[in-house]
Length: 180
Image (cartoon, rainbow, N blue to C red; front, top):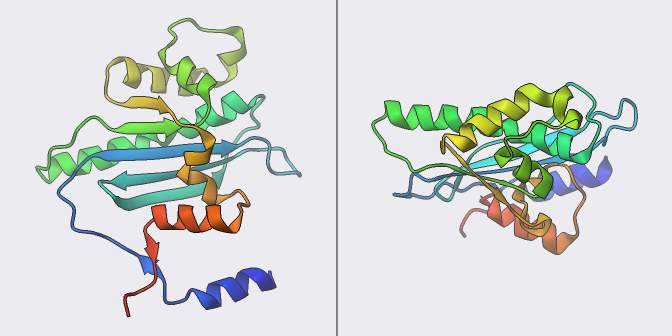
């Protein structure tokens, strides 16, 4: 706890940088830490949503149910689509056109499940999430893309990382110190 407080005191001048950006593309990064809570073995979901190069939404929260595999935990984190569609709806109401959003996941199994029309017996317990994501991918409302874990921006929200990795991810989250 002392380390956290010392770190926060040292960066009290930092803030979230919002740049003027003409791009209205939506990029979302989702990830999950499978069974990370040692008490109840529930997974932690985290995501970051960008509008252009600006971070506009982020979250880290415990999933409501215990996932029986890492793919299931990661797939449940993909339901960040609801946040993406809400942002897309807001842009539409503001008469701002946006391209098809891109969602990035570092779990290849979760990405492949989203395009596979065959139901597997192992997916029955998270079937609603599966159909929700699959329907939107098939209707081309969203593009779900596999992203290697080393590029997963959402990792900073729950995983311990090395200092260079932490600094790089913090920069990608647009957290900056004020100019002199």
